Amino acid sequence: MSTRSEVITQFTKVAEEQNRVLAPLDDDLPLLHSGLDSLCLAVIIARLEDALGVDAFTGAADAPFPVTIGDFERACENAVR
Image 1 (cartoon, rainbow, N blue to C red):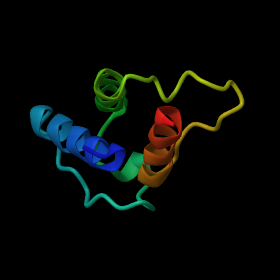
Image 2 (cartoon, one colour):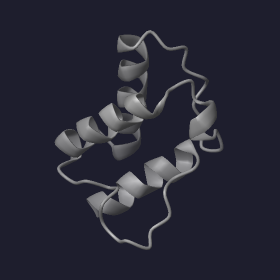
Image 3 (tube, helix red, strand yellow):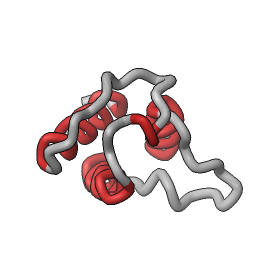
């Protein structure tokens, strides 16, 4: 499974499990408007760490925190490389 597919899968699964209405996911969608809260995002990050074998959000101290779905996905892709 590609990194993008795994990210989308985890967003969808967590939204369903938490009874959240997930906005249509596209690269420009701000995380704040995704329909998920910070706990949901923390669960997604933990699951992606397990699935991808890397933690995309504790690497470089100067890396910006993702603002959009596209930023989030790129952070994961960069960590896998």
